[in-house]
Length: 147
Image (cartoon, rainbow, N blue to C red):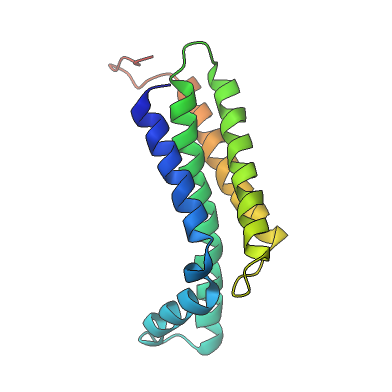
């Protein structure tokens, strides 16, 4: 596993866990999003819905990036198949999600949620499925696949 890929994976892991800390709780982040969305013509209900969607989409994207970083790092080992690399990346993501939610359960200003675990897992699974699909698909005409 090359050093750069591993370093990027660890950096992504640290970023995900940092985003689960107290400064990024809904009381801080939601206020900023509400302020920005108040400048639009959305109703209060629409603003609340939009903020909730952004927060959940954030979980999906965050764990998709984390999964892809780990997949790239783990796929660089010639002894490991892409399928095994994807399963290992998923295991790392799910462990991170569980640790993050357990940590949030211990912070007064944060709330742990099993629903968030599902959003995290969804992001990781979608990204890894797409990565595996793209690895199996034949290259476009005239292009050579680098393996």
